Image (cartoon, each protein chain N blue to C red):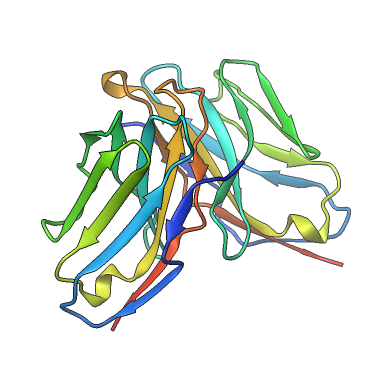
Length: 115
Length: 114
């Protein structure tokens, strides 16, 4: 049973470049979440989707960040242009349904370094 | 808004010691409560959960009881092992607007020494 798959695992890029992070949720899960983890801020919810529709993007830090979910099996988080302060581990998570009792399943994350 | 507060780490223990990691929450409704664990280089994994008051979640020797009167969900284990070294996150589900997103605490790092 494949879990949530994220790619790449590591990304190193220069300031100003575009970065695209990818996520494949667990088959059958219809809610998808993007989180960012840093030492200073901990885990921050950036955006979440239900049935491929963005429900809450209030955590997206700036217009430089955008997320899409073109179908039930794929999502992307894009940063353009990237800045050093975007360096963090980005996690994707999926869940079946919207009930509060249903746990999230996390991918192993993408470690982004912007120099 | 809803929030979760965890005790600050790191928590350093010897093997076979008793573990408590405190977690309290603020919520307007009746959230579900969770503990997640994160091992180095990995994503978060669900450790245990409780969905209503007085429920006890348990897994791998860890336990936590949903205490509505004290708005707490403290994590306990009777005898820790070196392999329990990880970061532990308390979380609640926020049902605002009918969609339940998870709100996490800051995490507590546990280091267990032989």
